[in-house]
Amino acid sequence: MKAEELRALQAPLKQTYRERPEAARITLRARSRMGEGITCKVETGKGLVEAGLHPAAGGDGLSACSGDMLLEALVACAGVTLEAVATAIGVELRDATVLAEGDLDFRGTLGVDREAPVGFTEIRLHFALDCDAEPEKIASLLKLTERYCVVYQTLRAGREIPVGYSLAGREGP
Image 1: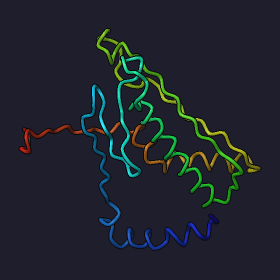
Image 2: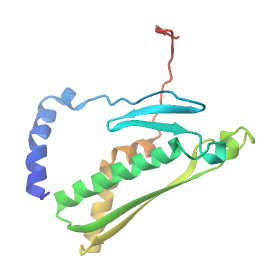
Image 3: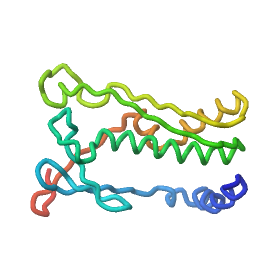
Image 4: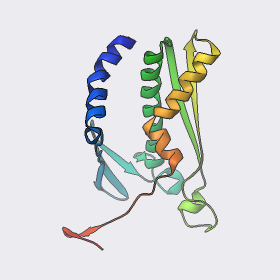
């Protein structure tokens, strides 16, 4: 896709969002349902994914691990954002690979050590680029990719996530 095509595609959306900011606010949803054993079925836009425990937490390794899925969401978002930004600012990428790595201490997840953290203690994001752009242009590409990557910004901001429940169709407190 060329920069002009991307601008033409996004221009009417941007105009609508300027005129009616409420139109830009949408709610995305994800849902899972109990599966067999200690798994759940996650509804995706492309079908069901069975998620289960990571082998370090007792899983058999046959189901997707939610920690892996989080990193996969990060590289997917960062990769798409990278390509869109590169197109918009005129950086011609011959190839690009996005790698995310995250460190976990399963003592926290398994309740072995109450002082051990639950969750990723560090996540690293790396871009391997094949292009002829000048270093300043690459710096701009990466800065804008960070700025506009939804998953990256959400993880960095540490948003509060309210938790609710219902019982047999009734709302909980």
